[in-house]
Amino acid sequence: MTNEKKRYAFISYNHKDVKWAKWLQEKLESYKLPSDIHNEFEDSRYLRPVFRDKTDLNTGILANELRKELEESKYLVVICSPNSAQSAWVSDEVKAFIEMGRLDFIIPFIVSGTPHNYKDRDCNSPYNDECYPIFLRQYTQQHPELELLGISTDEVGKEKAFIRVVSRMLGVSFDVLWKRHERQKRNRKIITCVSSIFFVAVLILIWLYNQPFDLKISCLEQEKNQNLPFVDGNIVLILENDTLKDSICDLNHAIVFKNIPRKYHNQNIKLHFSAYGYTKIDTTLNLKSEITLPIYRKTETYGLVRGVVIDSNDNPVHNAQVNIMEYTTKTDKTGCFSIHVPLAKQNSSDIGYIAIVSTDKYKTEEKVYPEGDNNITNKIYIQ
Image (cartoon, rainbow, N blue to C red):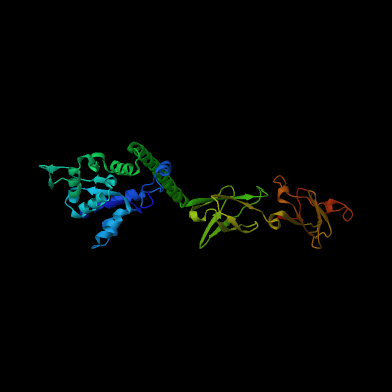
């Protein structure tokens, strides 16, 4: 735009065509030129600002102020219709622009009607569908060599008509601008389509993310022994203000907490485990869909072997040495002994253990076991 002009265009219209004027103003001011055309023709990437008199001027404004707006606008775009053809206001704006010697910068934008539809060549008595303002009709009739070609929305459509306006303003081939315009429209459609797909995908992910999930907890015994019993245990989950509890009947089967709110997934929660003969667990862990919980038996419950050694008279034997596998101990004054045997060492093939008495105190085992090995009188039990 030349330096002396403050506005790119002045839109002249009749108030009955205000919708068209607003549409064209918004289209012009939002139209972003391709970078190469911008660099070659104009010093702005946009065709702005665009002046629309009924919007920007108050009622009763002085004519000289309106003329000033016309002088500061590079182009005069006239919304041509039967309404503007009968408008003295529009005619005066056209007249002022022509008197400034700027006929070539007037762009008739025809939204309805037909230009130069004179009756008996009388430009003051147009048919009902004449669309050019009075002064423009008179001037072009007097100077037919200066006739302006209008841009009709009925003939080419709204979008092409708009691009033709831009083409005339920039002095660039319509075909060049239209191809770019179509390409930009396709790109916008692609972007819109991709954005829509992305948006739907995000909604699906959000929906999936907020779906409840099932929590599977498996208990894995660290020193497994098939001969030792498992009494029902309990697992308690503390999820903020919610507490979930379930019983474990069998270590071979996992327990499942159903419909856990998704918001707890990957969050730290408190877990409590308890079962007879096992070490209690009270921990905080990151909640996943599947959890394997290592559990340990209490050695004092299942790993401690206790017994009593008595003689043939059922009297307790004191300080007798007792060997169970590679583990050794001695009895106390009451004849009792206890040996810790790791759970992994305990074997189902052993019916019982034989207490071997040290020979330095007792001469024969028969004194301890008078009825022989098959009928042991002392008690050895696992608690």
